[in-house]
Image 1 (cartoon, rainbow, N blue to C red):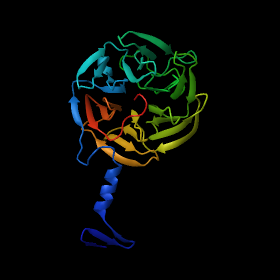
Image 2: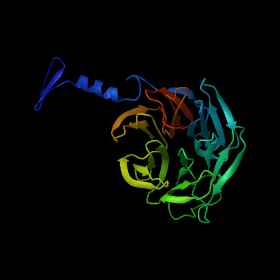
Image 3: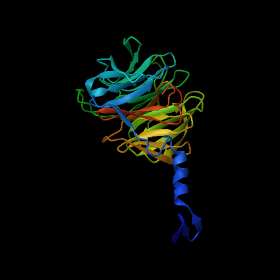
Image 4: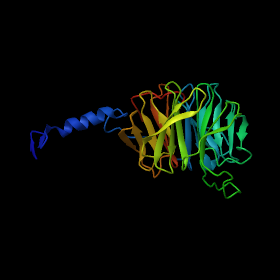
Length: 304
């Protein structure tokens, strides 16, 4: 093996490592190699659940402080709702209502633009849900959500009433709650593409993310391992990139399941992500007590 003018001679022939690095960079979702996340604020306790409205504003939760915060497209931050049912994951329904996994009482809330809310459902087959964690809503209004068990300091109970931690689907009005996958260790992040009829679910307890086809009746079909990484939260862009989260920051995978980039975040845990802003190309990142943003090449898919 030897170097000649920037090229490396190996047994299989000549190749240029610089060219390979440039090719890898072309696959990145950020604009440049030196692109870094920008701190917006670190005045929170634990941020989660970002979701974007039709104008590009992002709503996220500060769960220990029991509030939902609004990040506007002009960069302003303001409280939207407090108290907020200890909301965790959230998503905007096609009718513009904000749906929130309100795990203070293991419920799913529908929140109007003025902050008023109603409980859509609570419990499954007469038992208390573990704690709705993250939710995605199909274009027809069908809601899919994950229900892992994480013991909360505000709960009086100390164990689950359900035998498993599962994924559910439910009609937009909260009726017809059905378990669609109970063969996961600890499902957490969830996101879908209504056009391609695909749903992704992260099993953070088994360090895997699964990909499903969505059937005409809303059932989940053909489950396959998309990548061997779990995730707390996730989002999708229109090029099919899946953004996962964890200890290093944001892990980006292309639609074939290949890891193409890690966006480093200077916090011990990155919980969730959302593509917002007027052009939906600002990645808003909730990480521990902070939120960050970074510009990306591709806009978000759907309403998250």
